[in-house]
Length: 101
Image (cartoon, rainbow, N blue to C red; front, side):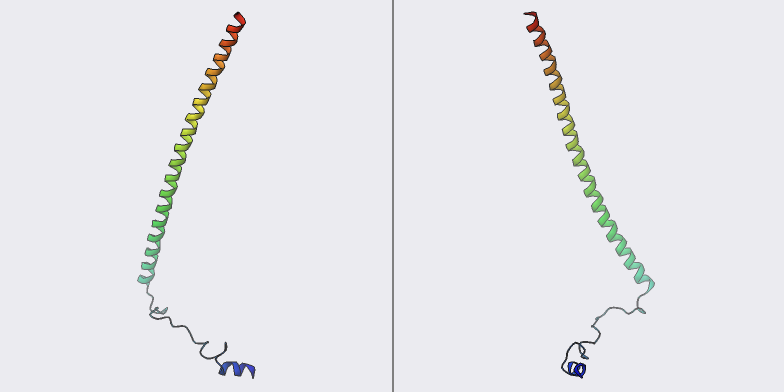
């Protein structure tokens, strides 16, 4: 009886809540043709191509920037190594001069 009261009162089990939603102008399965599916597939393919091209371009740009930063760090390391070697050479020369005094 409680279910009947719920139905009459417009509850969860009422006829109004059990009606199919309005799909508007959505085609039924018999109205979808092979050309519709091919068109949808082509649209999806084009969308995916666009997305992947954008991602590839972004990745390419990131890798180029990373390469520039790495190159800069390598140049700085080379400068430090050269400066260290010059300093070591100068220290050896100073030690030799001090020993001759």
